[in-house]
Length: 80
Image (cartoon, rainbow, N blue to C red; front, side, top):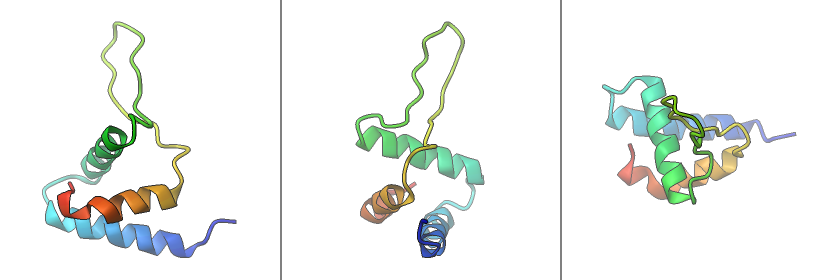
């Protein structure tokens, strides 16, 4: 079982970053963080477009919370 304490730690970090850019909507913030995480981690989670249709996005379904938390801690001065 994952440590439930991780939730408040991660949410606190998200709040701290979001308060620096309050005009962002929540999912704009999340998208921006995903984009920066992927760019700094060998494109982890970046959706690859294999069609002629426009497609953008990130798939972080399998990203562990502690990895994302560590990314935020290491980069929070530069985020969003």
